[in-house]
Image 1 (cartoon, rainbow, N blue to C red):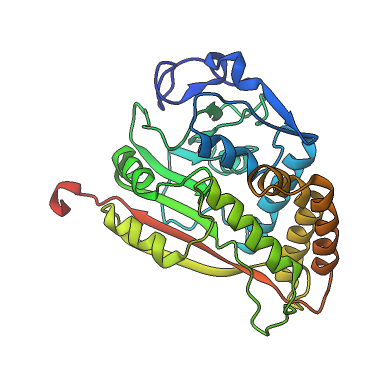
Image 2 (image 1 turned 30 degrees about the vertical axis):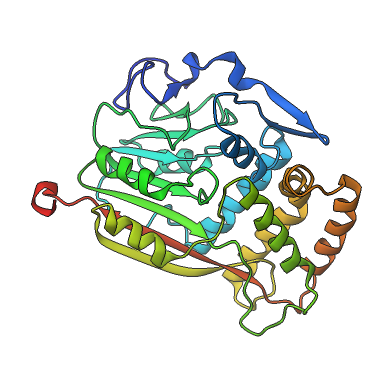
Amino acid sequence: AEPNDEDSAYGDDEGSALHYGSVSSSIYNFRMENGRTYHAVSNFNLWKEWSSDIFVGSTRTEKEQDRMDLVYHAILRLFDGKPFFAPVINPQRIVDMGTGTGIWALDVGDQYPEAQVVGIDLSPIQPKWVSPNVEFRIDDIESNWVFEKPLDLIHSRLCMGNAIRNWKHYLSESYRCLRPGGWVEAQEFDLLPRSDDDSFPPDSTILEWHKHFHDGMAKAGCNMRGSAQELKDHMEDAGFVNVGIVDTKLHMAPWSEDKKFKEVGGFMMLSMMDDISGMSMAVFTRLLGWDPLELEVFLAHVRKEWRNKDIHGYWPMFAVYGQKPLDPDATS
């Protein structure tokens, strides 16, 4: 079915979250730079404009959207097919913050056909023909939220330092918009490679790429680093209870003998080989002053090292979930 422009349980056209039908045509304008296509949203400050299009690269093209979906499938395999870990029972109102291509929202809508699922993102790259119980809206998830009815589950994935920079505000809004007993869950990974057997060479171009990437994102006011414990602390500070952590490793390449981790690593390596240039271009050229040709030479070395089976790299990945108390007044 086509996205519904009528009022829903999640808000109205005059609220913060916008329906497709009410989105200004300027939202669909994208700018070109170094052969890449980027968001052209004009009413967000500089760090938001930079970070929203830098981290996902050119989200307008099918190639980058395919890369985002590859990462989705890697994490789905890593989490054994679970879309979330929060022990929410029979959720009826679900929101996916920073929905990207919308694939998580679509899958959850299929799994919970009685639920209403809304995906929210800055970029209108989601499919326009979706199940009747799924809709997509265009908005900045760090703004103040408008929902007509309390939510059962608020989900986000890979938004740290990009779509979500201020966890205090994000979790405060989550707490406010959830029903008593509702859940929030954030799934993230720390964008700094690890190796349990010290298999990265001393002059690793992979580690060098990560260092430059973090330096560039820092110039845009974005911190892509974090830990499960930090996020747990943020949730508890916001008033959430029963906070749980799921820790795992997101393999960077198919080096593991374990079938699951080998598949996950294969997905992740393919996603990076496919579009590390897209992720890097704006960060390295616009923020760090690299020449585009210089960058491509460097990335060729990064790709070569990424295919080295003797390097056993991974990113720490975690899911953190928390519950709004059944009696919020009793805990305030």
